[in-house]
Image (cartoon, rainbow over all chains, first blue to last red; front, side):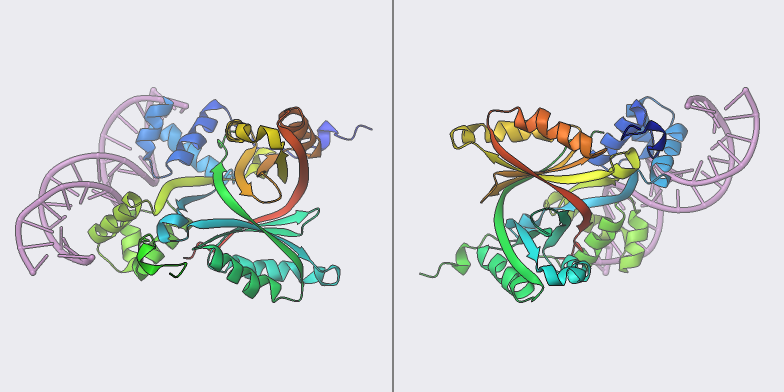
Length: 162
Length: 162
DNA sequence: GTTGAAACAAAACATAA
DNA sequence: TTATGTTTTGTTTCAAC
């Protein structure tokens, strides 16, 4: 039996070219009006609205949101903090990670399998603040085995194409 | 002279409580109408619009966008790929990274200082695809020294509070 | 910085093709 | 899927506070 049995593949939502273009336009500006989207896509506004609703309802679009630039708010330094949890404290990881999410400055959290257990993406004012963040929130926690911090020189998004 | 001379700090945009709440509401749903935002904030629609425009114009809001769930589109596996560039090929990093950004499945790219040179956050269909991605786009490139791939078990966003 | 009112634009919905 | 008409809702501007 083949490992990738076609019949067992979960059915992914299929997008046509118009859906893809609609997603791309919304990724660039999620506040565009339906009429303006419809015009650029070359379809009727009613059709466009139906497609947009379908993308939202099917979960393809998980949310309409904004990107906030932390640097403009004084958090000019971004870092990735790689964290290893003590083998005996793995059961605490989930709670620990959730606590982390709510801390100001935490932008993302990745739960990993592999060398590190999770990665925090943080935005802080300066190197002094990142040091303080690690000391207060990570080193002080007995569940944490080690941390390693890398400065983020640049952070970019993918094209958003699928 | 102190290292952090107050007078030399770049002036960060200061937000009041209403701005912060407005950002939080827009982060949850960037398509909310101005009227609805104004009502929840307890201010007039015209005031709300003025604040929203100020946040956009000052760059605090860098864009209005959508979040697409890759799993719904069949890309059910996310991974972080840590990449080291050969010492002699560092000058190619910028171009290389930019090429990466446009590849389907690439969600984010971090340019790092530290042990690794950059990190790719990718969403693919399965482990076979992530292997193929690394072989085609990374291992095949003479600028790449090493790669290390970690599965993402969970990916979360911060609270978005500042 | 904030406001309300008026003029304008768009959305939402139903219906029919 | 599109077109059209109706009703409802939201946006934008601006004089005034």
